[in-house]
Length: 304
Image (tube, helix red, strand yellow):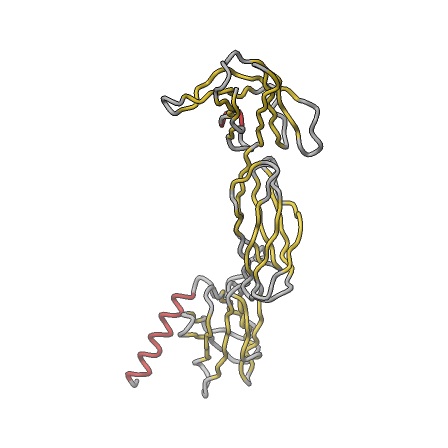
């Protein structure tokens, strides 16, 4: 046997071993990727060239009356010898142009699989932390860079168990898109374009807190959010100029004010403090009070 032919047969044997895990294996019924069929006929592979997306599977079926085989050096696979009606499948997980052939027939019949990168859509949020009532801008790009494509936007709020569609955006000339929204609490966003889904983007929310002086030693605190903070206590603080720190003065227990318009709930309280006039004061809500759906926050600072 010539040395060159022996080396070629050795390479094929190695490829068969490499591909044994996928040879003759049934396709997963739960896969969302596409499956493309190729027939192995006496005249050659039909179709001789197929174009698929990364992650798709090609299935070769021996439609000839003799044994056939499918081997690709470029894609690093080789089927076992296929008797008539038997099949071989291979999933292409990288983009490129992959030629294959049948070494059992002469002259050798050849085919090509062109693997395109899978469609993708990206998503980013800016800013990633907002005060209640403020907007964040979601933006991204589709992989084809085409204009006038529809990107669907989904959100999952803090206590939700699934994503809900909240709107759509159209892509610009370079495939970019933007979408403004006001998250009510900690929210994950996701973009969908066709069958492509972006990675989620998380936006966190701080409650809006205001402090006002009503009269001498009398103050009013208001907390704006999409939930009630009634029954929780916030810290009334004064600024220590010497130590340059905020110092706790007293706790203020919040109640429902009944002033909010859905979805906004306004918690608050009018309270008194004997702190002497002229001091800088504020309200501070710590992480325990803010809970899992909101970040800690402070009110505006005023003079007592």
